Figure 1: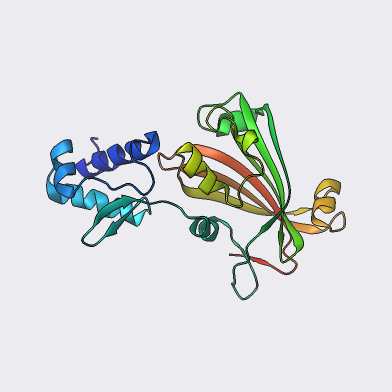
Figure 2: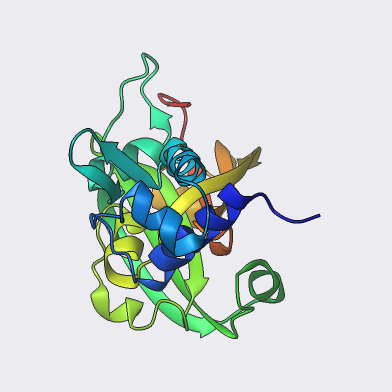
Length: 229
């Protein structure tokens, strides 16, 4: 079954953003121009832009035009960092320690990341909330897609902003699974808790705007005074 015309327009724009032809913050052609370039009606072009806006890929400004969404550190943190105080208030995490390692990909990592990379960067960080070590976070990305990542350490608080600004990789969504685990010696020492303390384990796969899995992440979280929302 052939894809609807508006989907073809969406795919074209997404591909232009992904390739770097359309950079974050840049203005898209007008509806009339998009229609002429893609051979669709102006109404179809308008529908495509509306759907892209609904997914947060573009923003439309009355009287100015349509722009590629540029994630700011605050918006990225709000969208993807979900530990909150019991009243729902967000707390900005602070970096305690960070180790970035270039290593061979494990079988599951190679199979689970776009391009089946042979080597990956492992980003291992401890993050604190209000001065208390609260999250032990291990993120894994393709070393061939994020070339030189280890040379950028210390990395910024919000990795997804780094991915977009330096590698043209926009994270659109993240799928998560949550379970309860007991702290082993390493996680207990990192989070300043006793061995066997219950921790929240969040396994995440992050996808770019082309729907490709580009990051795998596991976060072990203290939730004795926090909630995951």
